[in-house]
Amino acid sequence: MQKKKIAPRNKTRKIYVGSVPVGGGSLISVQTMTKTDTRDVKSTVRQIKSLQKAGCEIIRIAVPDIEAAKALGSIKKSVSIPVIADIHFDWRLALEAIKQGVDALRINPGNIGATWKVSEVVSAASDRHIPIRIGVNAGSLSKKLLAKYGHPTPEALVESAVEHINILEQLNFREIKVSLKASNIPTTVDAYRLFSRRFRYPLHIGISEAGPSFTGIIKSSVGLGILLAEGIGDTMRVSLSADPSEEIRVAYEILKSLGLRTKGANIISCPTCGRCEIDIRGLASKVESRLKNIDKPITVAVMGCAVNGPGEAREADIGIAGGKGIGLLFRKGKIIKHVEEKELLNELMQEINK
Image (tube, rainbow, N blue to C red):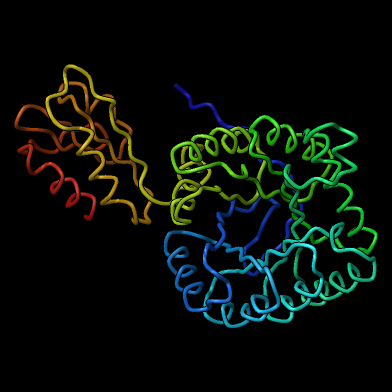
């Protein structure tokens, strides 16, 4: 049976965040945000390096004050992935961040204030070839838009983005990336759909305030999965009330599930049933833990039924299927050898390492 393909990627303009291309058919990049105090350079750098090891390709850093802005230079010099400065309202922080060598800004021009302030930021960004992300959030729409629409509707989110875009375009600035986030999935999805029909600016996608790991992963997978399957999205963040490395891991799993990225192991395992005679849940968890940091794309199957397992997982690169006291090690559905149950995990890992 031929696999059904997802929708082709939307055609968007290509911009660069540091050395990372965004839009224009480039790979969908994975990013997250530091959760350290930016003024603590050592801990922030340590976290960024850890996140890069996990697969983070662009990092965003909160800049709440001038001290944090001035710390960006030291942080930037100590890491090798692009840095985005996340700034609200204060154009002076944006100018300082640019001076410190950041690769992009996240700042909404309509919230900066006087036109001359916006012009200064745009001029400095243009000189350094630094793109600006317009980040529209349902929780921070203007009073004018809330009065017009009653609550944060998809149309309100898009209109807010248009207002900010117009400000930048009037200053002849088009190195723009846009996000339109809400914690409500239908609102977020419809906002991105509406925007992508009208504009070709690259889109950063996410579900804001998705929640702690369990609920946040479900919300993000559903919302981002819909958008990605429709060809919408050029870069993404999974927002969880959890360790940011978890955000990276989940993002790659979403992309892998749609065939959009191939980083790391794709693990398939059976849900178990009355035929299962080994601890599949425990075994699958151990396999997942052992393969958590693997880079090479590989599909690994952990099946509970030695009778049907190899056939059901025949498209896996390698896998194991359990029986009572003994199991099978197989590759592409073909049995390699019989293995004692207690040796299944070790035999699987040895075969993967080959």
